[in-house]
Amino acid sequence: MRSSSLAGGRGWAVAVLTACALGLAACGSGGSGSAPAGNSTPAAAQNVLPIVVDAGPAKGVNVPFVAVTICAPGSSNCQTIDHVIVDTGSTGLRIMSSVLNPSLALTQQTTGNGAPLVECTQFADGYVWGPVKKADLRLGGEAVNSVALQVIGDPGYGNVPSDCSSAGPAENSVQAFGGNGILGVGAFQQDCGPVCAQAATPGTYYACAGAACQAVAVDLAHQVQNPVGLLSSDNNGVVIDLPAVAATGAATVDGSLILGIGTQSDNALGSAQVFALDPSTGTLTTVFNGRRYAGSFIDSGSNALFFPDGGTAVCSSGFYCPASPQQFTATNQGSNGSSGSVDFTVANADSLLATGNTAFSNLAGPSSGIAGFDWGLSFHFGRRVYTAIEGRSTPGGSGPYAAY
Image 1 (tube, rainbow, N blue to C red):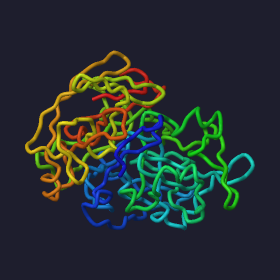
Image 2 (cartoon, rainbow, N blue to C red; image 1 turned 60 degrees about the vertical axis):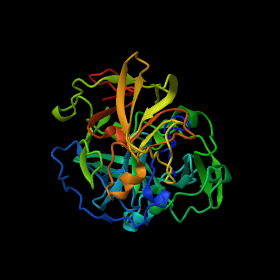
Image 3 (spheres, helix red, strand yellow; image 1 turned 30 degrees about the vertical axis):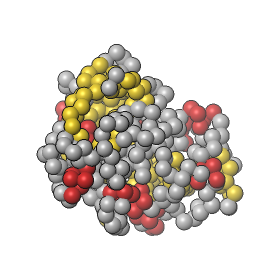
């Protein structure tokens, strides 16, 4: 199960814990539709993508989804793909090959010697593998051309290097991954950054000639990018806006992914408190039960709060199952000296999941394998949560930061 994030720095690990992965429900197939070029989003503004939290294609819980439109570069041949996970804990767009229309024929990105560029993205519990291709992209009513994205599970690239596959089982299908893809809109502009630009880094980028793949360095401009940072405007970060839910959850929830921070009336920072993030890891410090967890993070791609609490019972599902709802308080601290407490409730996961609902603000689990406190989607309900991209100017200062 994907129960940790940012395990290796710049968001290489993505946190999505699905009911399918936990064996809580049968898994279904993903869906996608097509849209001609020029169609506008039904959202209230050009810089808004509607979010839906529902069971999705893999029968999950607490997973936020958006739809994105992908076009063959320079053409009107486009496809709108729904149930793409929106994730502030990773960087870049990654789409399942199985849901892509083959007629798009996306442009393969190559290395300097002409070999296809292929990527391995490792998670705490497994990996995804697939080529890096170029596409034109529409997010809500805004567009960016020639974006590098990863196509997960492309059957033309079946030979996975051992230093990639050793991360665990493959998650190259909609059912295993929990969605038709993932839109990483975290605090970094590239998914690996200077580390992969300076030297070949096993477990990340590869040049593949036939069945032979060799790790290669990839300059910043050719790495998989945060597409929000490539927009002509509204390009300094995102806001996730989700309503509060009842103590027993909600069947579905509608919210918004708003592009930009302080660039339009709908994304004003207002009175949100800014927590500067570590510029290398994107993390902040959470103080809980007298201990400091410097590797903590706010992550819409984690479907619960994950934190260490040895006194709370754990269900067979892997979530916490206290006999009655428990109240906790933790304090978040940013590298800018900002500090603020957070009160939260943890309910019995078995009881929550038995409702058949898919959105919960009080779903939590142990943070095994994480050197910090994971403020997942449970934290987002009833809040506007801001993620500012590194080096970009905003009314709250330059990113990277999180604010709420």
